[in-house]
Image (cartoon, rainbow, N blue to C red; front, side, top):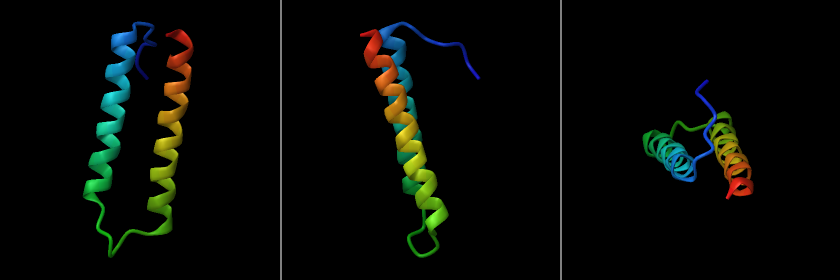
Length: 60
């Protein structure tokens, strides 16, 4: 993985990049062929993003 960041601007950029990655994945899904496993992965991505936000929030 990458180096841990403790700079608020870098942390916000990280969160923005992860959110954009999530949105790209959602946009690429085909509603007709999306299964429960795909939805579980999306939920895990959101949970990970929330965890990072909470971790960074403590630094702010």
